[in-house]
Image (cartoon, rainbow, N blue to C red):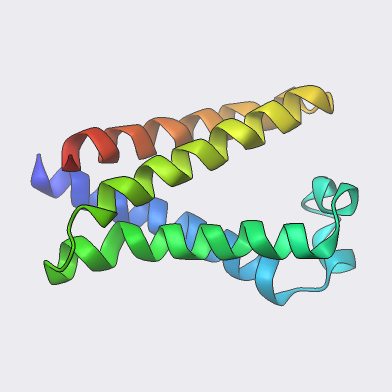
Length: 118
């Protein structure tokens, strides 16, 4: 089970580190073609979401890998699951239902990690 959890943690961390880094580093107009929602929010909100994704991605790996404050790993997974719930709600409200399955998959992975590591 530990190996499966590590694989899931690495995959989910890679997804959120990549997505968060994009939101933090790219101009909003460059994000818009792949993330249409970014134009509906002020740039600080987009940057905040990106920062939370990066911190969540780091939180999935570093605490458990170092053995320091290991409780932060499942808490990071819970935080990322919350982000995915909010993303799914946003996509439903804006008639982007085709995006919701990806949110649900990432949500499920985060829940498995949270349960497995608590």
